[in-house]
View (cartoon, rainbow, N blue to C red):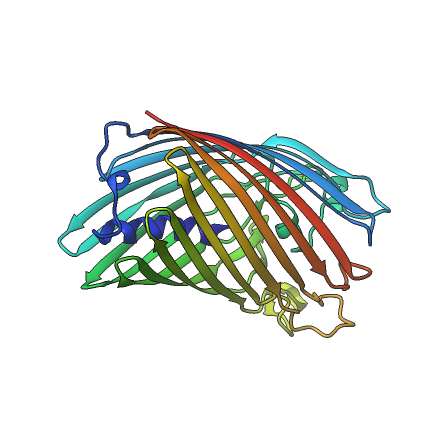
Length: 388
């Protein structure tokens, strides 16, 4: 999720650095305010295990942006209910999540575009749970594919970021970083212990090429360093550093049809946890999975007032490095998803969208799943955007 958010901001910087890609939306405009309200309802289930759940999300976003600077306020309300195992009660929560405030500034100097800012995540959500609630939660990484939102709160996070894009003829090369300071919060209501997740440093290298007047290639390499997690000021865990590479082919087929083909690979180094004498040591094998994903997204402008959206994708999570009889073994999973949708434009300042997504997930048996299981996931998303 973090990578997608950073990639979106990065793409804006690259687009602004390429005059051929820019449109009126990137320039100072008479309607700099943007209000976005949307809702998402998702449900998932499997007949192979006694597991099922639903999640309803309400999104609110208010943004002010011109070419040189902008600020965005984003809030989410979540209602989640699921049963992770037949032997336990359902996990249920209804809460606001943490509130995001994002800022940016942008400057252009001939062939160089600089974009930076500070992001703030305010602790308005629920971060602390009882021991019983924690025992009912789905902790397997499978939850990332079943539900959109899996974390409901944390501490005060502050993240400065800066990217620079340099234009060389038909190519743009960019570099950037993001440092996320993660604040302390209480994670268990039954105790007074304080949890402090490690800070994160994200580095990016990006390149964009104009193949022709209607087609482009974007490639993004990212490296994320994750700091040591602490409990009551004592080191307890460090997640392995992440490396990701994404390549996108963007094609405009005339004025009516645009397509994006994306291929992404993500790998993660070994974690570190408490060993003998309460010393942080590297795990014997790698408990993290390599992830590969490809998707094709198309937008067809049927008329001035209607666009048809189509998305199809495949995601493969490779088994991790442990043996099948080890408690840390994760057998991986495969996911296929399709997402049709439509967007209605009432005017240049207002539109609404309706999208449906169906995903089928094949999860293999391991410590977190007593047998192979097939999950069916349904999502419906409706939203409205108004610019003023």
